[in-house]
Length: 90
Image (tube, rainbow, N blue to C red; front, side, top):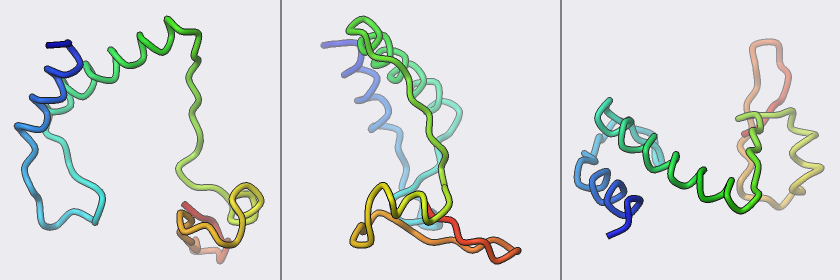
């Protein structure tokens, strides 16, 4: 069994259903984070061996920026309004 498959199987074996989490999200215990870090490390190593580089983008951006990238019909954009009234999106 590959190292990545072993880590993934261990993570799945420890995931507990938490009813209070938002849909599509979950909390990870420290033991799970150790395994997640190992899995991501393996994945990153493979990507780097093949010439890939990391890309990190903001969790949210100004709405106009996202609309320019994805368009009005995107179902992946969620709007947020800050206390000053500025519209940003996820």
